[in-house]
Length: 325
Image 1 (tube, rainbow, N blue to C red):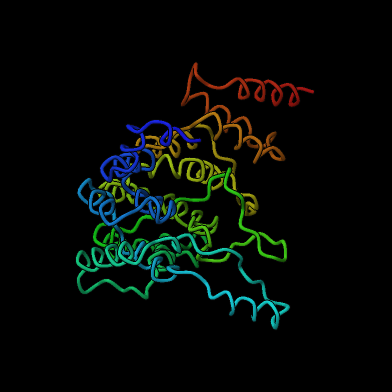
Image 2: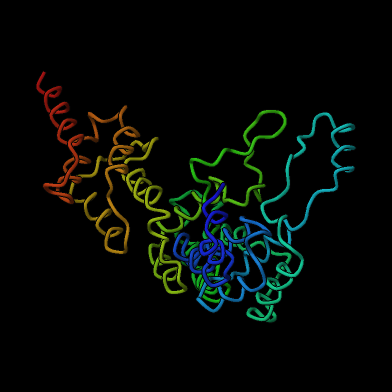
């Protein structure tokens, strides 16, 4: 039996709208408080919780309303039965969408609040993630993307600052991947469990690499966790840009100072060169470590100094020993 049922005080606190809202913001931040409140379902989120979240500065974005419009409610079981029976080659999702547990009053409260905030620019039938994809040149190769992105920068700023666009959280590793009845892992968009798929999260990290000032815009609206959320993808992405998997014929391995400059630029705005980033980067470049390793590992040393993890020292010794033999 849970603690709240054993202790009346705990139970009373757990039912309090202010306590629930404060817990959501403390655990998930203002940017994702509403997402997780909705994910936790009708037994957790109430009209009062929505009101308190708004009063405490939780971000209510147009994108959230758009996703709710797409995924609110449950499937018709009879229709699912018929589709399963007569469409043998079609994967039929099982379960209900992430927002299906919302009560109608809560759904209407959220939609009304977004409508009041956005006024004539609500675009319920739009999709701000898709819009962000096009504005940030997601259809272009990364070398060709900056020109288009900076051309659209004013629209991107409007999307973030005025429409409060924040990507949904990406799927935690402990969460099971959604699988279709065929056994394949689903990357359908929008996802059943609400979390952003890898494709969408990679799109956001790529946009940050092209225009790091996007971090400032997100922090300005209260998305303070943007760097911690995107840290691994952005830092490793920066190294992939330095050491492309399929380098052109005229590619020259960058020196340590060049890599330091790239990483320090990201560190200054809140990203971190963590042990995990270092270890994953070494594994990622393992097949070319004899070519790129000296520059890469020297850069890590220059940034971290005495706090450089042991794996860097061991790899440097390995590279230098092999070059002498």
